Amino acid sequence: MRKGLHFGDADIQHGADGRLRHLLSMEGLRAGEILQILDAAESFLEIGQRVIKKTPTLRGRTIVNLFFENSTRTRSTFELAAKRLSADVLNIAVSTSSQSKGESLLDTVDNLRAMHVDGFVIRHPEAGAAHQVARHVGGEALVINAGDGQHAHPTQALLDVFTIRHYRGPIENLVVAIVGDVLHSRVARSQIYALSTLGCPEIRVIGPRTLVPAELSALGVHVYHDLDAGLQGADVVCALRLQRERMETHRLPSQDEYHRRFGLTSQRLEKAAADALVLHPGPMNRGVEIASELADGPQAVILAQVTHGLAVRMAVLTLLAGALGGEED
Amino acid sequence: MSTKPGWEVEPLLDAMMRSLAPWRQEAETGMIGIYTGGAWIARRLHAAMGLDLPLGEVDISFYRDDFSHVGLHPQVRASHIPFDVDGRQIILVDDVCYTGRTIRAAMNEIFDYGRPARIILAVLVDRGGRELPIQPDVAALRLTPVSGEAIKLTGPEPLCLELRQVEGRP
Image (cartoon, rainbow over all chains, first blue to last red; front, side, top):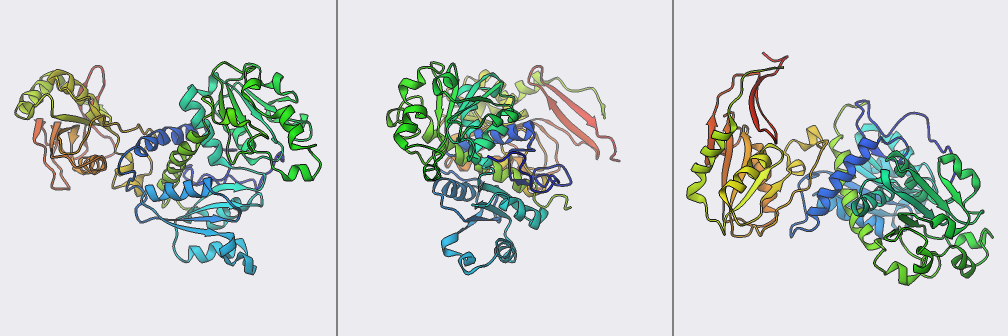
């Protein structure tokens, strides 16, 4: 995780009228806006249980999923979210796009703008890609960052705080521990901003020194290099996916060694609060950052996170689409 | 904003109940209130009428026909219809019937749960000004406010119905 990663000083997430029109990072989002999204997501969760799981909210709108990185969960939940809001959806994956022919990101976006699309959901390996697109399109279309490099993954953080609030009530009363490769994780970075904006009294980050450096405490989090100490009394434990390429860069000894020291198991979890909730953004490395028996056990809410992700993405699309056609800058 | 003396809500609720009597079938009739005011009225009617099916409540935020102009309502509640809508007689309750657009949105939402046999519309106040061919079956009070006047139900305890003069409009 890079500190102070900014892409221009202007607040491009909000329009001149103060309304949220792009979702690029959790940084800069007001608590009231996050709560509005979470409340709307509760409504969409109910709609997801109906026989007809659709609302007319985005009828006539076109949303493009522009994915320059592989994703199953995020891309399919964004697609389904837009479809359930009655929008038309275009899915563009890098392998089938003209990016491989050397077209630039903004050229791709301009071609889609010429088709009068209303929104872009962007995943890109480079930090700041979604910001670049948002600055380019201004108020003409909504832009949602679905993960950019090691920078941010705001809808993942929103679905995580939604899940935590759904099962455990207000964030203001909870101790939350994030375990794993915090340094390189866009998920962790967004989680930390979301939790602190919602008034989480104690955010802990746990992992080896190479992946959880002490400097992270500048973000207002408590840094632990010992799993048992970090889990002590935690109400919520968020596991992070261990990127295998970290082994290759010698930041980690081996998967087995990592699992022995920082892998979550039911036994290690005994240190946490008795009913501690276990989250994982997926895809899981079973037996590395999390043991199968824990991932499939009663305290894990990993599949509920997927259901919640759909509801949260419907809420975000609805909020941003509602600000379309407002005051232009 | 100035407020004129309001109306007693209790007698109006009694009047609604009397008018709804012909449609009352304890075991079969469902009732749905529209957030926020309609849900307050519906809770009172539902309890007083002794209907067997639990009360439903809908928030029409995602069904509004002016969504693309006004955006998402700052406070959205989850809709909840705890009975099977299919083939059922439903009393739809709102506080004020004005343009008819809220009722249209609510009916669209109800149809996403199933196909009701019949929907009966019951409102506290019919204030005219319809923009769609929708009329209440039951209205306890019929008013014709002049331009610039707004009818507002506040609650839930106590329920107060007021005619307000909206400033800045002739």
